[in-house]
Length: 355
Image (cartoon, rainbow, N blue to C red; front, side, top):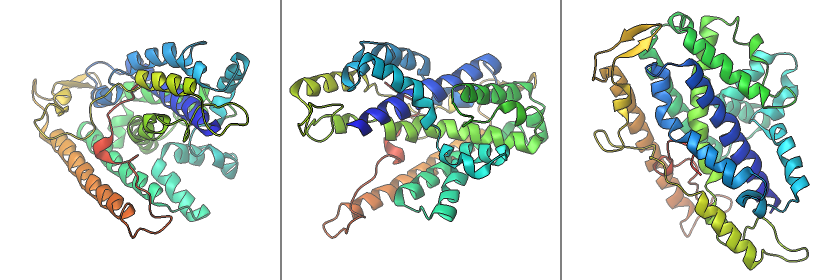
């Protein structure tokens, strides 16, 4: 279907993988040293992103690869689709005209998903179970980001003195602006170079949270589609004119594509001390403003506590999601509250993009 192709090409491949995924990895490797705490923080959320995106390019994007063979486009149509993909991202872009020349407020809305959801609720009356769940997960992730940052930067001024962080933020925003048309992401030169310490803190916090949210719940929503593609009478990339479902060949090529895009990644939820516990990445010493911080081979107690609280909040949300789904799937559930939601269920989320 057109929607299936649109979401796969624009939201999944372009936005999550090629735009944001590549931009964040590029910026962190260019400007954050291997022992920088922010790069350590991002490690699980960037796990195998380079190899995953290389695989996506070879198997899903290149001409005559699995992606174009599934989409209902000619070679020229595929090129045209890629050329306009950036016009449909990011979330919040539809509100660009609302803010006019106030780029700072618009940029905050694009990066701060929580503010975006609240804006939709206040000005558009949009208040759905999906938006409420995404907002809850966003707040959990942002609390984790802020708790982690505050252990190494007790004040916004100390963060502002870190040239690596400033260069990382500037470069990441520049990459997003460069790969997005029509000024949907404002030029960072006007929003980072001369911003205050508090503004830089908010930019850094929102960028990190936005990235972590996008590669976990965002990717789950737009990229985890095998369950839909298994039945071409329900959802197919294309079908013959005049028919109501895809062909057997479409079913086979879709199944082949899904087999290329089902690589499991580490789960976001993990028990302390388990194999999935990634707090070893935070062992000292790390380097902040050129100075070593922390004891060698030890995770700072406050950092460990931030991760434990993060996991506890995810676990509590997972229980709430289970309760929501049980009620939605019960025999007495009434329309439209009779559909379960798993896109933001923490126990189903992986830490990084997969293909």
